[in-house]
Amino acid sequence: MSVTDVEAPARRAAKPVRKPPRKPRPAPGAKRFSPLRVLGSTIVWLFTAGNILVLYWLLTASFKTPVEIFTKPFDLPYQWFKVGKPFRNFIYAWNNAGFGEAVLTTVVLVGLATVVTVAVSAPCAYALTRLGVRGAGPMTNVVAIGMGVPFQTVIIPLFVVLSKVHLDNEYGLFVLYVALSIPFTVFLMTGFFRSLPDELEEAAALDGASPTRTFFSVMLPLTRGGMITALTLNAIGLWNETLLAIVFLKDQAHFTLSRALFTFYGAASYQSEYGGLIAGVAIVVLPMLVLYLVLARRIITGLTLGAGK
Amino acid sequence: MATVTTPITPPARAVKAGAHLSRKKRLFWPFAAPALVLYLAFLVLPTIATVVLSFTSWAGAGDTPEPNGVTNYTQMWASDSFQYAFRNTLIYVFLGGIGTFALAFLFTMVLRDMKGGKIVRAILFFPNIVAPVALGMFLGFVFKYQPGKQGLANYVLESLGADAAKFLAPSNVTGVVTASLIWASSGFYITILMAAVDRIPPYLYEDAELGGASPWQKFKNITLPMTWDVVGVAGVLWTINALKIFELVFVLAGPGTYAPPNEAWTLGIYVFDRTFGSNGTPDFGAACACAVAMIVLVSVLVVLLRRLMRRDAIQF
Image (cartoon, rainbow over all chains, first blue to last red; front, side, top):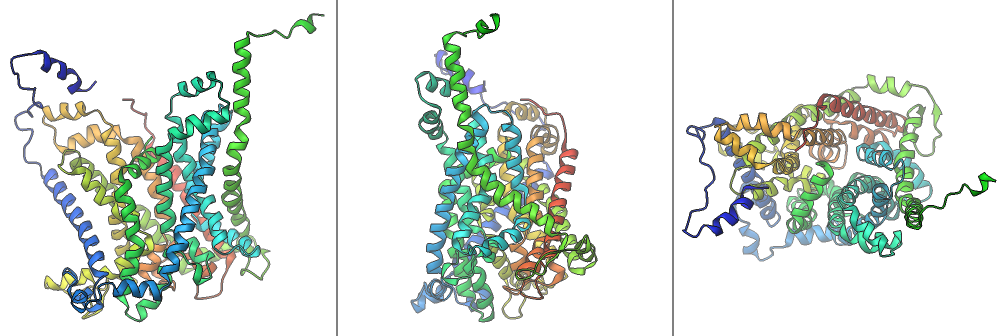
């Protein structure tokens, strides 16, 4: 029971206005000057300011000319607004690096892959946690170990087999994205299913619901928060994924964003097309930033559930 | 006769419950199979195939794998590129890990009773949602060395009156990547550790404050023991992630879409370059051997870490 629970009624009962008890005053000398606290707060603020500056730099540089980027890194991008073509860099990246098509490919691919991943992983996580089957615990661990396998170690056999069946394209990549996201998603979802009370399932069974129905109408809706977290984390991960996209996508018309950015990097560096390059980086980063701002709390609870307990 | 009558009819309700339970269990395979099959087909089997292929000589598509024992491993071990890759990967895991966790611990000491702590956490987490490719490119701009067109870091150095430094020269690049890695990933570990710190009952800290404990004492006697198991999990996650680092180094240290200089390689780059690299002929056998080295390294490090971190769990 926390302190406030105890105090609230007491305060109401005592009619003569009594000040609510303050937080205990620290012992004399407790708030003494601590070099660690000063050092720590300084580093924290410097770090935070640095991150904000990075974001500011990225945003403004995407509207600047290469000369401005390098000679006036902290100024606002005034030249393009003066010339009147503020989105020149974005237009360049969109047209010359094929970002327009890449956005569509990425959204469809990442969207479908995350949805299918969760659709496949949620029943599996439920089966592993709540069906009371022997050996489910060790099986969960076996799946969780998959999170530790670096993609590099599976990429060669997968590449050989998938190119043999002509799936070294976005369809093959879709299957790979789903399959390789499964360990993490199952692990995350088992955490959510485990946290649900048994009584709900028992109540559903007493009401005559079949196990399948119990899952779809009672248990699954209760893990909606978990599913949103899993969708978000997978979306961020797959949106940023580059290694598999580099290996499996050959046709420029079906590049994902990160893959297109990777190709663009080489070309743009030679042409000193830094404005377009920064705009490309911004196109990849900003949607995820928005997603993060909207769903920050879910992302963090998901991570803690996955990593914490 | 007795044997015929023995099937004891249990009470009706128990029958129902038992039937329900077995119906539940029948659900297991239809529910679990799709995910498990995909897991088996795309992670377990390829891993086994990689191990097998690492003992063959195989130039890649068009060639057939020929068994050649441990030749790949001995050749790989003797090669400069592997030694650089191995050394750099260990640097990222250990130096990067020490830096990241030192920073994360420092933050847990001050962030708890700091105003705006939640916002600070959200801001610090931000580099983790950026694609490693984009992050590498961005850092390439920051550390760019080109007189007259200096990157952000050199711009600041020069405006302070110092000389510009060649941050991305092959001999410096590992240090720069390590620092970048610490910057980019500390937010993730701060987030995890702070979430664990939030679960610690506040009266412990209040008590310590009454006793006049310093931030360090509070950290040593409350925070660290109470979050020990989360620290352990975070350590494992770090090891796994730092070991497979690839895109960040590839883009930051390289001239573009070609592999960076050997001095900057990681194990991930070694595998990639031997399979799909643009310089030199592909050598799938050597790539598989390096991939196996990665698995072995990650397993050894994780097991060691778990050993070292083993403590009796504190219930609270």
